[in-house]
Length: 196
Ligand SMILES: Cc1cc2nc3c(=O)[nH]c(=O)nc-3n(C[C@H](O)[C@H](O)[C@H](O)COP(=O)(O)O)c2cc1C
Image 1 (cartoon, protein in one colour):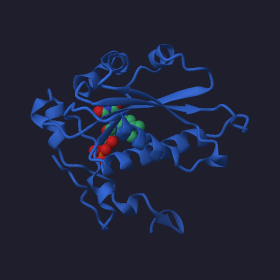
Image 2: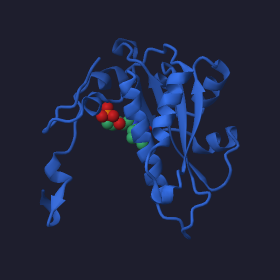
Image 3: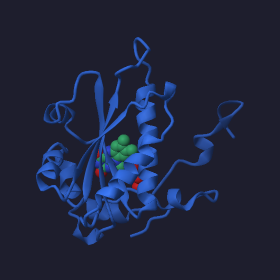
Image 4: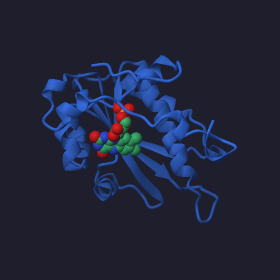
C-alpha cells in the first residue's frame, strides 16, 4: 500500500513515498542490498567527521540471528516486526569524541546516517520502520556492546506486505492518514514562532 505524503510543496519522490509500514512481506533482502543501505549511511556528514554510527544487522535468512534481535524488541513491536526481512540495530559511539562532557552531536550524526539509510532503502523498494520500543539493556548484553555506546533504535526493513495480516490495533493504524504539523509551525524567520 502506498501512502504518499500530501505535501505543500513538490518534493523528491523518494521522500514523498517513504513511510513506516508495519505490514512487511518477509521476503528475503539480498545481502548486497543491505550493504547498499549501510553504504548510504556511511557517507553521512558528521561533526569532525567522527562517524559515530554503528549498525548490527540481523537478516531473516539467518534465522537464529534474526530471532536474537527480534527478542530484544518490546512486545508491542514484536506483534508486527516478525514480518520484517531484516532488523538493523543502530548504536551511537562516543569513542574518540573530544568534547567533555560530550555534546549531543553523536546522536544527531547517527540520526543523519539513518536518514540516508532509510531513503536509500526507498530507492530499492524497501521500507524501513524505526523502533525506539526496544530493550536497550538486553541489546547491550546480547551483543556485548562496550561502554561509551548508546543504543538508539532498531529498524525493521522489508518490502510492502498486506495490511490485512496485521493484528489490531495495527491493522487500522496501517491505513490511517499520515499527518504532519504545518510548515508555519516548524519554520520561523525573524523571531521564534514567526512563520517563514
Ligand atoms: C526514532 C523513532 C522511533 C520510533 N519508534 C517506533 C516504535 O517503537 N514502534 C512503532 O511502531 N513505530 C515507531 N516509530 C515510527 C513512527 O511512529 C513514525 O515514523 C511516525 O508515526 C511517522 O510516520 P511515517 O514514518 O509513516 O511518516 C519510530 C520512529 C522513529 C523515527
